[in-house]
Length: 242
Image 1 (cartoon, rainbow, N blue to C red):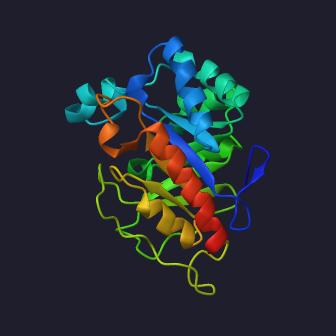
Image 2 (cartoon, rainbow, N blue to C red; image 1 turned 60 degrees about the vertical axis):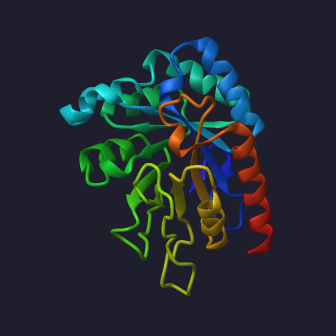
């Protein structure tokens, strides 16, 4: 798989995605320093979430409404990411969000774990011709799932936060991931050990939340920028030792 001008795979640097916590972005003046800060961590890409609260069960909607990323800011999000040499993407939950990514030059799409059986949405993503990262619950598929030419699967423990997730097994001939491409989406709290273990086991994509203030609603499973930068540095070291 290729994202932007970067090849994704074991023989290439790990593609590190910084998931920005949607609740911190509601005005352009807040978006600019966030993207600049992400760029300084050494991340490869940056991602927001393009959902509408009404997509979720009624019991979740009030909480989700606080986390909605304003869609009118998405064009600026992509433009600023590219200006800071970051590839830009989004988690999508409806066809309108997919089209918003296409129309504004986004580099990749993400499908959340809870959308794993949403084949209508997956079809819309495939029709977009953008690279797709798709999360799945690795507790249900402990030996991993193969991706396709346009879909790269990200294993994850879907608990928020996840304290001691089980990382899927490493490479053993053709037993796991014959296409040699898989990734890890991390929801741990204050550490990133799981990310390093995943990279040591040939993960070529890492996704991790990044937060900027202790009151951020998703800070419980996010790293501060200085922690995120340290994680990226240790990922690069791990790559050299595997």
